[in-house]
Image (cartoon, rainbow, N blue to C red; front, side, top):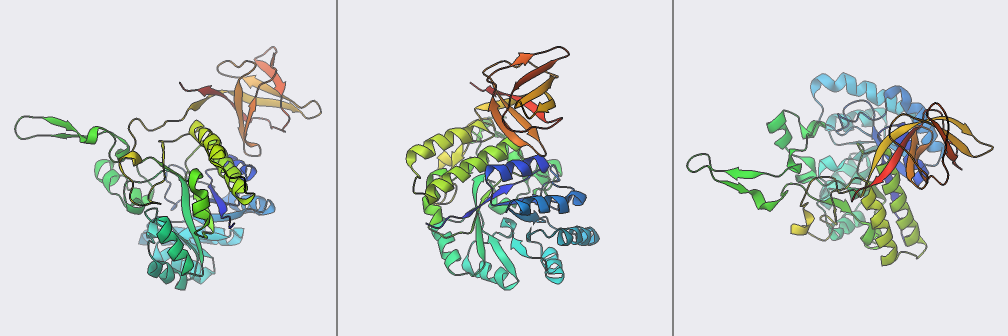
Length: 394
């Protein structure tokens, strides 16, 4: 059975460590600007060489997103970012603007074509392949049959999205945010006005209002392919991508670990409906808008759209404090409590740049003076790692 590589999103160093520890084969993130995530700048340029080296040491590929639309006044900035990327020895740049493609070719930086290019057919994929693309990221609107056909007719690698937010617009080409809030989705500034409930109002006669569709008609559910990984594997794609560069470390860790478990089970012929049921419960713990299989079997019907507020996660986290010391011989962590209360039997996240996102249950908690508490922790944690209590949402 062909198993695609698992590609995880990264927001910062903590989520990078989380993704690697959770079993990602490759990661992708922005560097500074021009990466379609203004609210989440990603890794700062000066940090890039060290973090690429860290990922490579763990056998993980690194792809840098430079997939925003570029204007003339930004070409100098673009060249500086590409110079940093080139020196870092990152594995490829994900892009779609011809200025980025041209400069990457000149600088001999491998390129992957972003989903922003809306590659939906063989001819488009072959065109970018001739331009030097080592991989094409297909449009989210492609079906499994279309994906398999494109993969069969190109020599470059093929990547598809397997999990995460879906946009109501084709490959994110939406102007709603720009019109309403002067924030362009095509420049990474989307304020997501589509995720709201709307009414139609008669402004000319009676002032009647109608609730559009009785729900959130422009807000699709999140893509989730846990139950159809066997069918995806048959298309022979090279990378299965998790969306979520703006998400929390626990989201990235949980989703990556879940798909790692499922892909390994598929490889070892242990992929069952019962396993998928268990893994769906894990995915529901972190941020989600409900799940659908998107366009992979054709255009989604009414069940592909949300019916309530955005986040349907079954858990949330509450900040408790920071790690003040770790005793490796005893396997005990010391916590400086700054907010809330913690007790035996509760679960927590411990998160930090080197630790990543560690989830554990408090088997024993001893409270001390000066807001200090200690608890068993088999994994090494670090000074100033943040500790969050996990709270079930009813």
